[in-house]
Length: 146
Image (cartoon, rainbow, N blue to C red):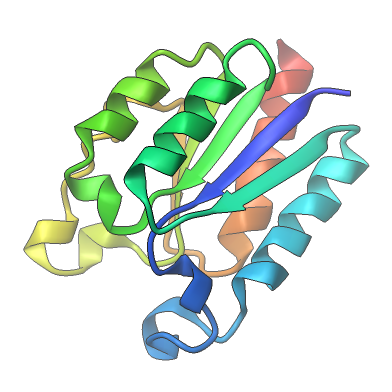
């Protein structure tokens, strides 16, 4: 069964508690469970990792090369300045989805630039917890069409 790697970056371990007016009240475990249900239904294995450390996320993407069919990443604040993540994603041959709970384009100016956007297949943003489900639905559909 094809493997999908779901990565969650800095501070996402605080979901449900951190700024619920922006990020909602769902926990990261609930978001991952939503994604896992879609992956399972589509015949995929979901692996997930949350890290507050950029290098650990880079290592995970590199480790997915040749092993995973897709990477879904919610990079958190790393979205805006991590050229290391951008380079790692550029070296991954597979479906890549950038995911955000909030809509960065409608927030502070510094959040409006994504350095990883040029290296992903698509972006899901602004749909809160549903974004995790939507991202996996997009991956499953894309993989089925390839």
